[in-house]
Length: 117
Length: 110
Image (cartoon, rainbow over all chains, first blue to last red):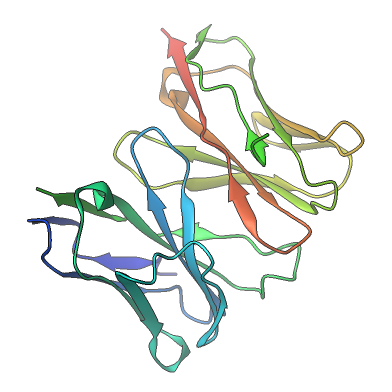
């Protein structure tokens, strides 16, 4: 079974530029998550989709970040314009079950390391 | 108080010893508890999860949950240098949101 795919793996941009990340979850997984992980910290949830609906985006900086999940499968996360503090690893995860299920176990992709200069 | 707290470490143990990693959480309605291992420069990978009080064993790993004390731990028996990594505790709280701790760095000395 293929895992969660993400691209690109690395991205270097200058502040005020825009960037987009792509995620393809494990086939059949209902729930998709985008996390931001800053060095030395645990992953912080940015947005959670259930099929193609948003379940939680309370920690997404909506003035600069946007995300969508097309047809309940692939997802893109965009930052526009980027700030220095956006330098982090952006992780995509997916899970088979809906988030109300206690067995909802998340599987992570390899991540995209973003550096903002 | 942080929602999920872990000692950042580093925790250093000799090869072959038992490593004990601890995690406390604040939401009494939390229902599921996960341990992930994250090697430097890699993404988190699931080790195991637990949702009932008591112990759950999987190979060299044992997760322990005490909901009354709001405490979950991970024991690694016969620790190997390849176990050196950051261990993330994740808690699915009463609002169905999964919160990650900052992780504990484990170093196993050969």
